[in-house]
Image (spheres, rainbow, N blue to C red):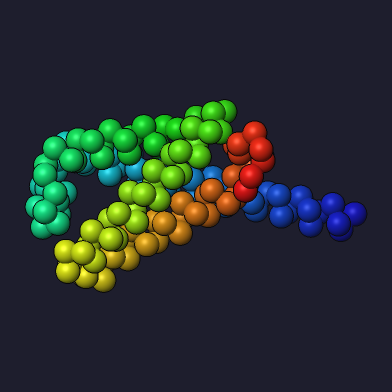
Length: 137
């Protein structure tokens, strides 16, 4: 009986961990996407400091919002894979942009790095129903 209890506990932990990491990533994508689309002053100043044009915020914002939806809706495992890839491209691009611009403020570098970890955790913990047809991890 202990084996079944342990297996159930592990399965329950995986499910909870998956949803916590996924919700945090989706929340960040939604909030960040809204801020980008609305071009809030804090986001505009970051983009100016990094040297990106302001229209880039609309593009990023729309893709972030679509990515959040893709991660949360049931089915569509291939779309989810692309959404995870987009999250990683976005966050590693944020880190690379800061490094390339010489703006290496630890506070600004920590957030995208933590979010990369959460996105990787969400991807690794996703249930079989949210994986691609080949079942790849």
